[in-house]
Length: 146
Image (cartoon, rainbow, N blue to C red; front, side):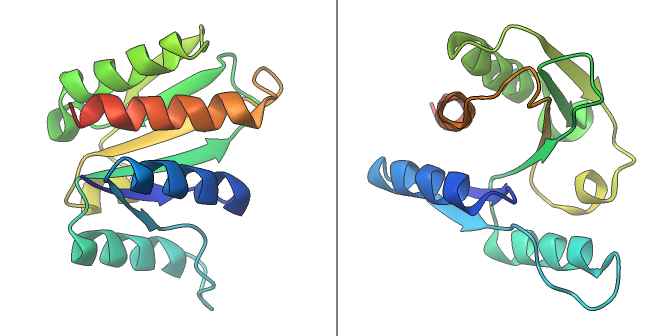
């Protein structure tokens, strides 16, 4: 399966890419693009995701203002609840206990990427171990390919 990953932490991206490649999956790095115009980054990411024909776009954003460990934002209509539930159940199996799910089909990425989009907001005050985050992401992605 081909995944688009949008994480600003290059070390995390490379660990995810290596593991997923070992397991026969393709990861397209859709992290920060240095566009000269604000907002142009999102357009570039959408264009790259659609041209690569990914099956899922996963964005990881750190947000310490949340009450939850993890908040997964998606469009239920576009991604379907089964994808979201499988992904979140895999995160729970990796030790994430406080996960909220939000439906928001108004966000630019969710509206314009042709594949299902999961935006995973992580409160790193509540989850401080990057290995747990990487393992949770890999487990979540693998749950979608079964």
